[in-house]
Image 1 (cartoon, rainbow, N blue to C red):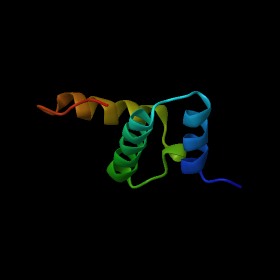
Image 2 (cartoon, helix red, strand yellow; image 1 turned 180 degrees about the vertical axis):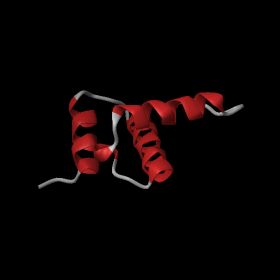
Image 3 (tube, rainbow, N blue to C red; image 1 turned 90 degrees about the vertical axis):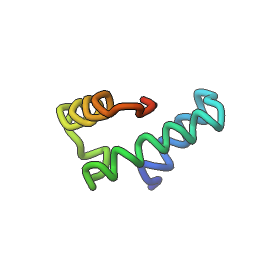
Length: 64
C-alpha cells in the first residue's frame, strides 16, 4: 500500500503538474507536518486553518 506521500506524488503526476510545482506542494506539506509533528492525514480542518493563518501573520513569508 503506497504511503500518503507517494499517493500525493502520483496524483500530482496524473493531473500533469510541473515538477517545480510538485516540489513546492511537497515542501508545503512537509512544513505542515513539521508544524504539528503529525501526519497531515490526521489533521483537522481547524488545525490546517490555524496553520494557514499563522503563515499569513508572518512578515515576508511567501505563501505557497
